[in-house]
Image (cartoon, rainbow, N blue to C red; front, side, top):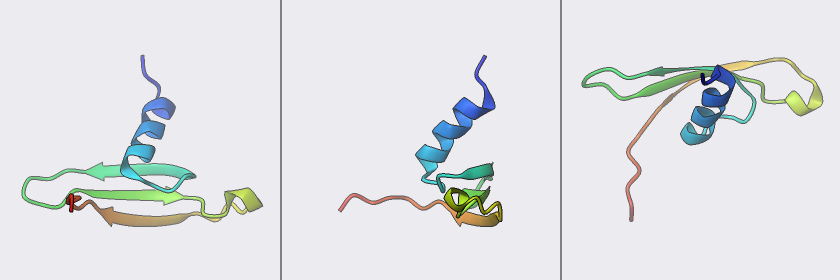
Length: 64
């Protein structure tokens, strides 16, 4: 059995999400850009528990 903490951490790293991500939602729809919505703590080191929710669109990385 794989825990959500384990696989979630792997996705956070793979997708390049903020280090202190609380949750994320990955949306994959036919003929649309893949989007990732996430909530994260920008100042967790300062014990500030104010979180931010944002949405990213994934784009193809081109080798130049």
